[in-house]
Amino acid sequence: MVKPEISKQLVLPPALTMAFKEDKQLKAYFAKLPDCKQREYTEYIIEAKKESTKQKRMEKIIPLIRKGAGLNDHYKKS
Image (cartoon, rainbow, N blue to C red; front, side):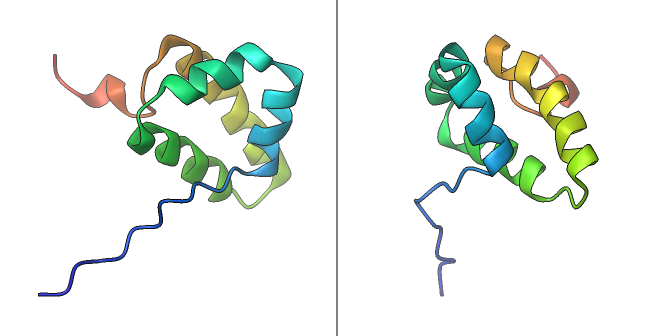
């Protein structure tokens, strides 16, 4: 059985890096998130093709990061 290779290195998209430079507190909130949620957010931004879509997605995820919530947590049952 071959196990898939998982990259440990998280590459932040430029939009997220800029948001962290503008708001150091946001970076601290992001750092507190589990790796799986950090990866979820970075992939969500990277997958957007248009710059306008990336910006809309950033506006959506910033409040979620501040809450410590995952991108799809609202779908999970409590």
